[in-house]
Image (cartoon, rainbow, N blue to C red; front, side):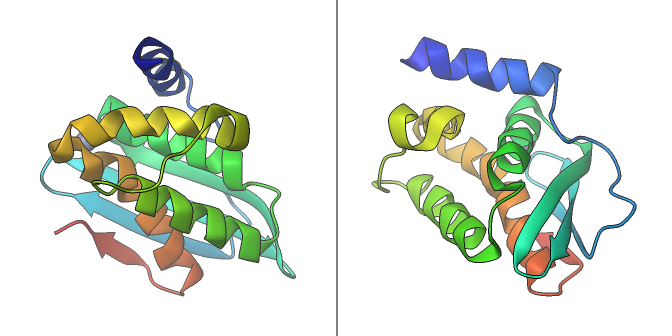
Length: 145
Ligand code: ZN
């Protein structure tokens, strides 16, 4: 399982999905993780109560980029309430003793669980998700510090 998780992370880092600017974004927030030097910005296009697309750009380590890529795949196209619930679940799952994510229920997102064994990297993995919440709440900047 660990090997599969690692493969998914490496693959998303190499070929990030929904990467680049989102010109018609309705919400955008920049996230910084000074511990590692990750700087990602997350943009959302909201239409009514549906998230049409989530995109991200910026620079970061493999884990921060893979997590952002997995996030954009998971949240694009969802009703906003469901997207928020899912993002909330992922953030809880990355806490020590958090609930598990499963391949059957959460698909590739489950790969993020591999990070739980490396507490110093959890901030890398959660950065994009915090930026997503920040953007939806009308904020423009968030930091893990
Ligand atoms: Zn990082």
